[in-house]
Image (cartoon, rainbow, N blue to C red; front, top):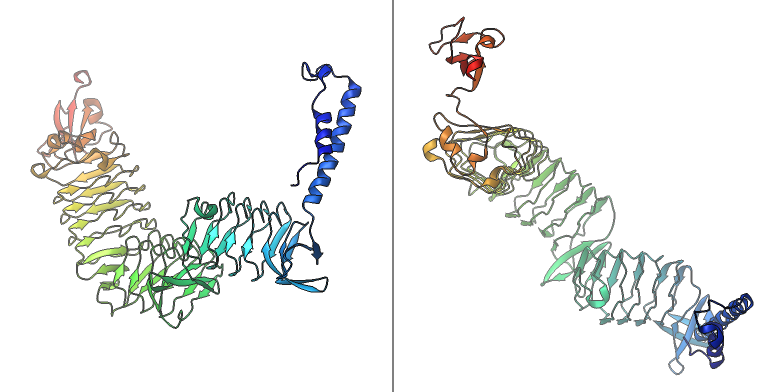
Length: 571
C-alpha cells in the first residue's frame, strides 16, 4: 500500500485522537454533537484510505478481464496484477496491447489475493514466477497446475488456500519461499518432480508437505494418464495413482521397459474395483494397495517376484486370489484383514510357495510353514508351523483345526480373529508366540496341549469372552508365565481346568495363580446339603458306584461329579 498522504494523517489525528479538554477519562464526558462529528470524520477518512489503496493497486492495462503491469518495456514482458477475478480464469502466454505483443512471465504480488470466488486457474508455460501472496486466501481453488516453466514460488503464494487437495511441483522449480503453502489444510497429496526434497509433516519448503498424507519425491518424473511415473534409485517405478476409476488397466511398459509398483501407490483408492497388472510389473511394494476396499479380485502376473508388507491389507472385498509361479517373496501381513477372502490358489509351478491339498492357504515349501490363511483354510497335516501373522485380522474365521504336525504357533498368528469361538492347541505344539490369540474377542474355550513349554507375552490377552481354559501341561513340566498372557481376561469367573493332582502346583506358579477357579477333575467340585442330595440334585452314589438313598456326610457322586455331601449345620 502507498504511503498515507499528509492530509490523511491529519484527518486521522482529528478523528481518533481526542483534544485536550476531552482526553481525561477517555472521552467519558464528550458531548453528543462531538461524537456525531467524529463519526462523520471517520467515514471520510475511510473513503480517503480506500482511494489511496485504489491508487496503490492500479494497473497499466487490462485485456479480457485480466489486469497487467508492464515489467519490461524493452523486452515487452508483463505480469498479472490485482483485479476482481471470479470463476475460471485462463492466463494467456502473451497479450496484445497498444500495437505491441507482450509475454506474460509472472503472476504478480497479490494478483489473486482474496479472490474467494476464483474456482479454477490456467497458468501458461510462459510464467516463470509466482510471486508473494499471489493466490493468498483463494479458498475456492481446489487444484492448480503449475507449468514446467516456473522456477520460483514466492512466500505466502498459496497460503490459506484451504480448498487445495493435490499439488504437483514441476522439475523446473528451484525455490519455494517461506509459508508459500501455509494454512492449506486440505492439501493431502503432493507430487514433487523437482530436485527439492519434501518431507511429510515438516514445514520446510513453504509448508508444502506439512498437512500431506501422501508425498512422492521423484525428480524428473511425469504423468502417464493418472499415474505418476519416474525412476527411484535407478528403477522405473509407478509411484502414485491419482485417479478415481473403478476399472483400471496399467500401462504395458514404462519407457519401453518393465517397472515396479511403489509402496503406497494405490493407498486407499477405495473406488477401485478391478485392476489389470501387466506382465511388465516385477514387484508390488509395501502398502501398495492398502485400503482398496472396493477391489474384488486380484491376479498377480507371472512377472511379479515380490509382494511387500501390507501390500493388499484392508482390501476387504477381495474374495479370490491367485499367486503366480514367479513370486518368491511375500511380506508380513500382505493380506491382513482381507475379510472376504474365500479362496487362495498358488500356481503349481511355484517352487517357493504352494497351496497343497486345496488348503486355501499359502505355505512356504522349504519350512512347511503356513504363512497366510483365510476363512476357509484347512491346515494340512504336513504343516509344522503357523507363521507370524498368518491369520492376523481374519475376522471371518469361525473355526480352525490345528493338526498334530504343528510345533510352533508364531507371533500374532491368530490375532484379531474376532469370530473364532474355540481353539485346541494340540500336544505337538511347543511354543505359542507373543500375541498369538490376542483380541480374539469371541473366544470362549481354549485347550493347551501337554507339550507346550513357552507362552509369549499377551498370547491370550483381550479374549474377554473366555470362560474355560483347559491346560494339559503336567505339574512336573509346568512353567511360569507372565501376568499379561491372559491380560483383560476375567480370571475371577474364567475356570482353569488342570491335570490330575496338579491343582496346587498351578495355584502356586506365577501367572497361573491369578485364576481364582482352578479345578482338578479328579477332586470334589462342590458341597451339597444332605436334604437336597436325595431330592433335586439327582441320584446319589458312593465311591463304589452304589446308589445311596440316605447319604451321610462325605464324598459321593452326583450327576457324574464328585461332591462333598455334608449336613447344613456342618458348613
